[in-house]
Image: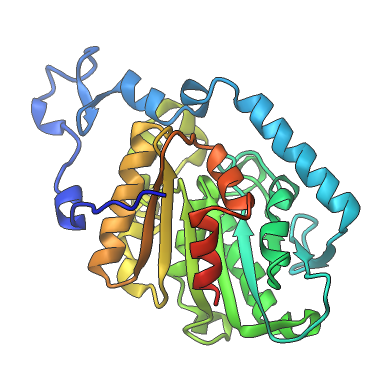
Length: 314
């Protein structure tokens, strides 16, 4: 799998919305609302369906694969909080043992869709190698706020740290990953001050961000993301790119060549910023892979991305 060298985060962050064009140009079809994007181009750059025409079929196939896994190897489901949505699936290796590593993987879905079940098909890629696979659930933005989703994910991980030994996990071997909007949430977990939750500052020992987002400023400008309803302050506070100096562990960043221009740019931006912070464990650009197929690559069990993730987990 190709590894590429990217520009430093300072160069990537130097660009800004084209507000300097003046008020007369705003509202015209060619007005640049972000970097070199017109409004339509930015909307398209954050539209999964635009770049993956068979998105529904692909997601249905992954869901079916997950159902088979859940049928053959039912997970243990625990509650990390009082709300019905605050549940955590725990897939464990078939061979019992203590002191195993655990990947806590956060599902994507534009903060609106998806579920812990939607990533069940990834579990064997970890359990077959002796690691646990945990998938947290949380209320979607339709019944929640983005700060609320971040809080739920943090509480799920803190719960996993406190109860790790009960299901054979070494609390000193917790890793977090996520895809798409879940990649954004995973990045937020990596910038968390875990001492505020009564946990060690280095609770997480590594991270994996697949086709994820690190800067919400352009995201909220796209028409399809009006559901986020973030204040200017929240846009900054919930953009992990501004907090990567707080990351305490190595992180792998990956995306597909078939991702949209903005997902590719944000992946490159995140990788550059992590490199500048001394926390980049590796960057993977997967040729011919789209936004959803990257999960198939991780779950295949024989990819360089999967091997690097397992190596990160030792």
